[in-house]
Image (tube, rainbow, N blue to C red; front, top):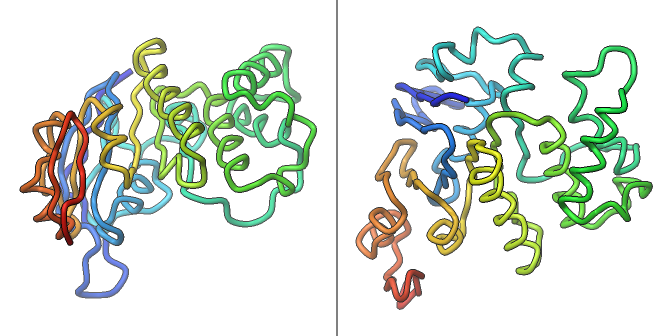
Length: 252
């Protein structure tokens, strides 16, 4: 497992209007990192560029001593698992089939006993074994999100990129998924990068926080050093107080 270095990333969708503006930071292996910021500041664009779903106009993403742009797709899929914010398109298969897609970088001709065991463990870990034969498209939004996280677990990568992994889940399931993220770091030694909107989740579960504003890094560091009343006001335009390790909005 290796460090991730993001250097001088710039991405624009409209000429003259940059979504990312020379963004740079470093993530150390074995950390749970929360990416925070207002809607439209470039959080999702950033994680998609780390995983090479989007390509930057300039700048590099380096994992260890290799640039992401140099990796073959199969290499990248074994290294990084990406869970999108929401599903797009149609998946016609069962939950088992969907989670088995996480094994695609490893499968030669057909799934091996090891592949089947890894998928079964992912289903058990997320408490969705009972859904294994259900059609993915018949699930609720929260169930779909959980299945996609199980698919990521089945990839057995070194790095997990979660884009709003708890968006469609109730509070109980949110806490369970965030606890899984901590387990991946503490028990499995993985690196977990999560785009989050909930500052309290970041305060509770993250080792490192990157706050974005206007396509760049506004602040980064330990959660309690970065998620401050002053930074919340500057980034979100909201007055808040930090009480007992949680933030509380006091006025808009």
